Length: 106
Image (cartoon, rainbow, N blue to C red; front, side, top):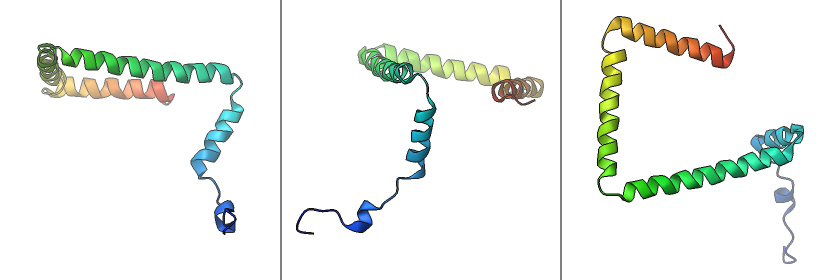
């Protein structure tokens, strides 16, 4: 141990399953440059949108107005889609249809 070597039990530790599956998925990717570029673009877009939200939040009147808009839209959506049974059933049917289209099941 005094030589700075790792103990034998630490050297034999296996990687968790998530690292193995992500490495396999990465190895299957044909265009690694495009995937890497998309990942970097996603991180940059997230950073820019965070900066924009921070800048909007710093304007004194806008956060309160946006909060009122959100509360108003939530109330309108609940009244339009959730209060009456036929509207509620139509909303659930539409959600199930969209879910079926996304997942490919019927």
